[in-house]
Image 1 (cartoon, one colour):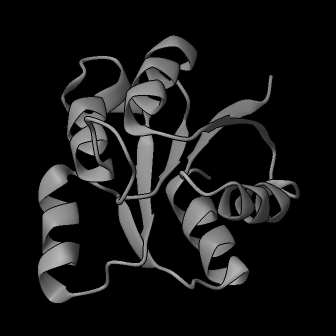
Image 2 (cartoon, rainbow, N blue to C red):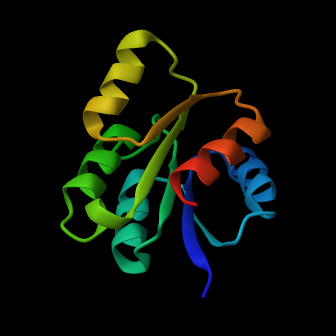
Length: 123
């Protein structure tokens, strides 16, 4: 059975790029374009991995989604969260780690760096 990965970004082109990068990995890939849908989809699918943008429209940003995933008794123990964001200031990265992310990659990121991070977190 393939592992599941959820790709969350409000920009369709970025989601497509990440999907193409992740195609070589052994995952069933799912998408969401906002924080609320991301959280609901994660609760339903229980993915091993969430690739999550920080800045999104709606009530929940990526930091909040990450916090809720990590606070969930089931998801928190099984789901790795990689924040993928243009926000690369030291305070942004610290905020990501405070939210519980397992890795923080700043856009534009290298596809190889993304795959290496995925392989390290979800062997």
